Length: 429
Image (cartoon, rainbow, N blue to C red; front, side):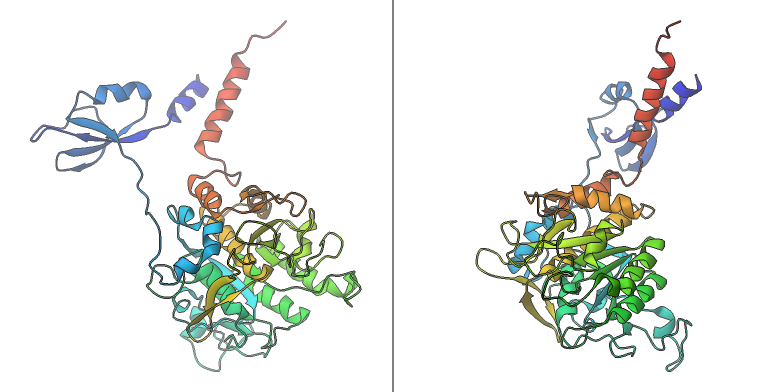
């Protein structure tokens, strides 16, 4: 009996709009949520009750969901073919704001003054409002208001290469602001951490420090569009034994529930045989996602590394049918084109941010599992997921609560119904 009462209490309800005749009183017995003039918003818990509403007023209709028909007014959006490949417009109908999740970009820095990025940059409040020359937040870094430059050991992560600014714009250029381009997230919170110098090179030690900084300052996602040479290949002098700092950085992130989204590499080789790190740690750590690149047709880019075990999924990072690479932000309020798995990676970081907004307590394994399912196309044998990112599928499930990241009331109801069947089934003596 208790079980039956619980099942009844979980019955799905739905909102209806009832239009009453002018001056008509509110009928008794209705669960009225809101009244506006002669319109009532009512909650009807059972299918059998819905038919009774039809006699109450001029009409009774469901309180349907309306969605923004999202196409941003950014003037260069028409040239952003990569957003169309991942079905961004469909995703934006449900969600466009990722600013509830801090995403750290470990890269060449970011032009944090850029017209299309500055509104979406993370800031360290204690340092921004603190005393110059003093470590106001006690984290060992002085004046790190906008992040930190580990390559030069100073608190100014300004980009002097362009790569980091471009990557940041792919994920989080301000959308619908009438300027430049749109990011996969129109609103974002991007942490600028510079470990690569103006030539685009950096060190494992700086990577280790940057990941620790990101985790300690609250980042939930680390976007790392960089990596080693392909280990084991004749051209690569790096040995597995050299990589302990990278491994321990990934482990530090894992121990704090932080996702690491990493580029698979641009060597055009099988990463199962010649792995590029940290992306290849996807085979050992559930918080690492390795990203390959596709072109405008959803086909693997010729330069992209691939691997049925060492690469998880792809995203746009190549060129379209016109030979045009991916358009995004560049330093000094400019815009330009780049290609590579580095470009593909921030699309996936945006997807992880969208998921985390709906499922803040999801495990890294849950998040990764869903990403491997939220794909389109046919890349079997090239990536574990067998496809490339479908951002609309990610956001749709993130908005509806599905995808295995959480247990909704529908799943609970189903479980209870199954239990009821087991309890009431005839038993053999």
